[in-house]
Image (tube, rainbow, N blue to C red; front, side, top):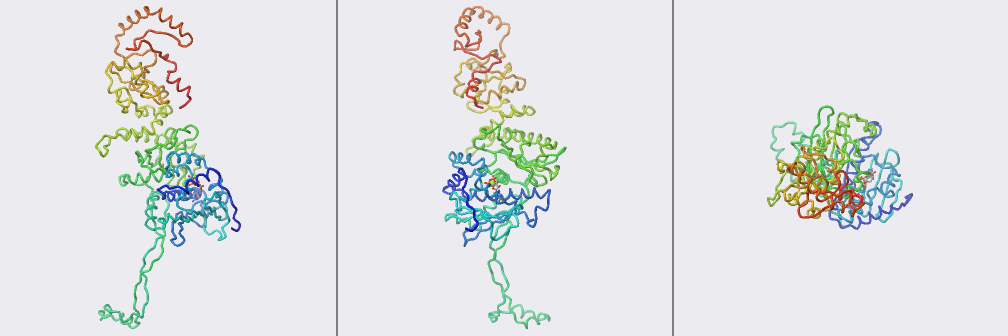
Length: 606
Ligand code: ADP
Ligand code: MG
């Protein structure tokens, strides 16, 4: 082609495209969600830029999306009036630069096979190759002429200056040449349903080109005789009409098909609506539109904060944790909240609104109190933001607390605890929170769940634990180990089991660290059953002392002998009364690492 430059896709991108174009994935329609969301992102960007410089809008002032199908050409076109892409953008964004999520997504794909997750990995665009075998991206940015990107997913793409000139004004038009088996996306009603599903919560108007039947007037004098003349003949005393009668023109109507743009989405920001008027289904749909998640949210909270700073917000807890969520906890956990100021999206990459351990929360925050032209840098400094952050954490914990009290019945009438499902997915975040968020520690501690020697495989809270304690018990007991099976068999439990005391099982590597940062709960101190100095609270102190003194004396020679024998391996030998059937056990010093902790430190895992 004339003046077209050819480029090779970056290797990982190429591999991904290969997988997509050959995929048998059933829910091919997700490509539309990805394209609409990209169009919306591009519109958000130009709207943000135009806040400080209205001239940036130029002649393309209508911030909207238009979708049309051409049955004859078998093409589907999605057009937006967003920021557009320069030639350089087209080359780097759509092919030569591997986006950080590319490799992760390919990995996740081989594990889960769920192509629907593509949007979460920052490579959503390539989903077009689920339905198209040739794609053109025509784009006009304020900073360049209009260019055309084109690829048939054959490991190369071309970019050329558009010979038609700068026809778009500004924005991007994506033309999909549909595959043989993707003809359904040419159907008006199929498209309408999909656009509805995927765009209900896009805050820009979306129009679809639809066929309309229209009655048009036709002059038809050949069929004069057929005129029954009812109206004219019955209109005997109308003088003026008589004049018309003389003209003898018969007006007839004919139905013709015309094409017209029809608005599909409602475009009222959900968070600004009255929550009593929003259905659960709408919340779920909004969550999906916002997050790119394919499952429903686990729960949400919709509120208006008043006082020092006013803002509206909806926060969601997902029901599934993203793939390998904790792998990059410390270096890459982007915040999941979108910050709007008077419905203009300011940023969705902001980590200051929620602490890191809550980065899995999704949602929107819209404030009227921040200046519209606030820069991302300024925002970091803004004290309003600190106030907002505080409220957002409080509301998030309130939402989780509420979820924790919920009990539902499944179809068979069995009790289900939605919080436990949440705990299975995101429990680690709560544990991290206990260690990282001192101000909210007491609330977070109540959100912890444990299996115990008495819970029969079920999860219990510390509140449950304390409620089940005998009155004399003064500590909350726990035992740490590799797995439930391992701790269950531990000789450290013998005495406690016999006394009927409950012991929390800490079986995740992180558990002991979390427990280490909790000193007490409801005035009961946390006590490892594998550490020195274990007491239960029911001992008769004087009696115990006396007995201990006696045994200590009696066993001094043995203790010394043992200490000699294990020289360098143990720090002391003491006589204790903690075991029942086992003759001797090795314990850890009260302030040293426990055996389990040492195991973890050796493995160096979080
Ligand atoms: P993501 O949207 O997560 O960044 P995508 O694969 O969907 O990932 O898109 C890749 C990039 O291509 C976007 O980040 C954006 O820079 C660019 N892009 C895609 N579609 C458009 C569009 N309609 N207008 C402007 N830029 C776009
Ligand atoms: Mg995208």
